Image (cartoon, rainbow, N blue to C red; front, side, top):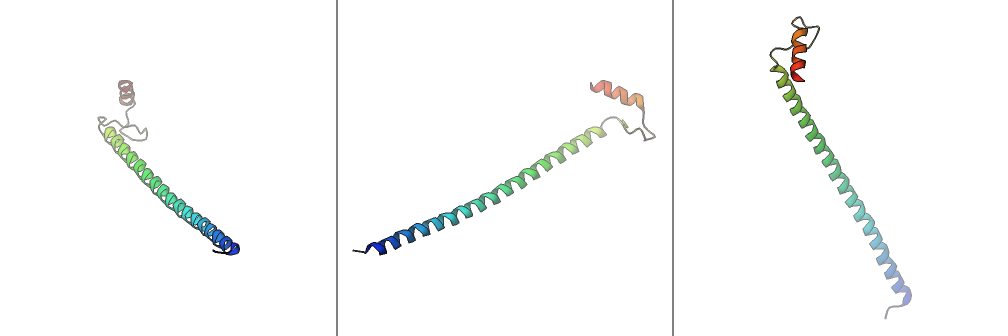
Length: 91
């Protein structure tokens, strides 16, 4: 039979090594989770940028189809009557 002091050393050594392993494992899990979270945020941001680019392209394409409507008052081709008529038709 093993003496009591030796048994206590073995018990506390096992307990301490278990706590150390648990700390190390939790730390590695947190690091993996943080990396996954960062990757997810980057993908989400890229997705939002792609959606915004598509919306911008659609907006630009629809503005080109407006029968040559010029909305810039500084442009020499600007016609206020056409602009007002377009707004009335849109609403």
